[in-house]
Amino acid sequence: MNIVRVPSPLRDYTGGGASISARGASVAEILADIERQHQGMRFRMIDEQDRIRPHIRIFVNQREVHTLDEAVGARDEIHLICALSGG
Image 1 (cartoon, helix red, strand yellow):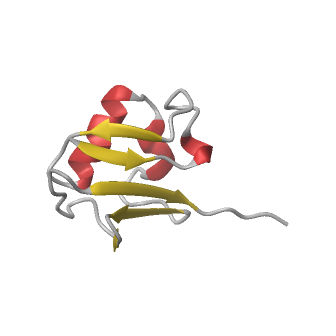
Image 2 (spheres, one colour):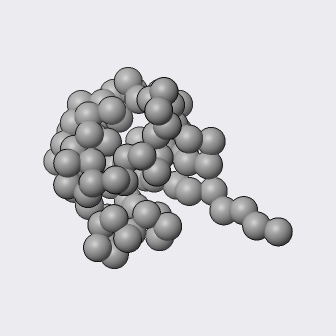
């Protein structure tokens, strides 16, 4: 089971939870498990071409991942980061 750290802009999907649990051997599998538990959340992070949206960063432990096929270990921690912008 992996711990996933959820940024505040996505916490509406998790009932306010700052961290959730998910299972998977890749980033894609982790996100699929998150989607099963929290419908609609994946679309906020991943576009229609299965690419990570430009304003989202995903880290496995302290390593940024750039594709969904990146491997995830059983005890790795996943950090979802949302960029903020404004004017």
